[in-house]
Image (cartoon, rainbow, N blue to C red; front, top):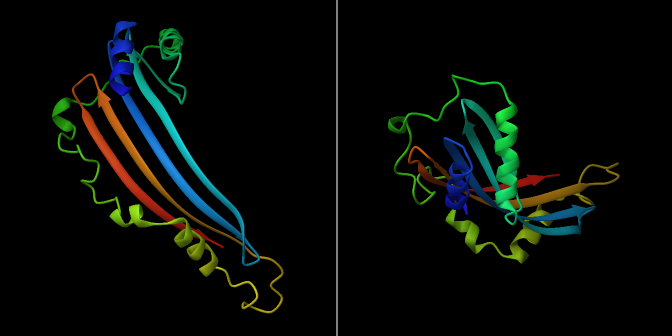
Length: 173
């Protein structure tokens, strides 16, 4: 999808382009007064692009992959209306990473993420609660446990191809 988008952007008049394809998966368990209140699972895929057209620059994003050609037509028409920016450019290819191909090079991905079950998420959310055992006068308590996986690919017309993968784990009460 990212390669197709970049090729279409060039075909439609951009001289240079950078494309970001990102997928984020998030699972969360909410508690209210020490009991499960809400469970959610979401997956979001989005495509963002930076377009360089006739000395002008613009950024655009979508999560709709059908109709990509007309989206790019409108994006390029919009960039053409902007003021020129002679200082805006893609980084020199010699200054960009060439070894980020698995997404795990930075050590921000926890392989334990793959082993987390729904029961574990519920247990973690409930374990953060102090409702009924906390200070006297506690009227109500809301909590949330969530974890997420973000996986992204970045490529551009200067030959950049990088992948970044990271996990995150959050508690709030």
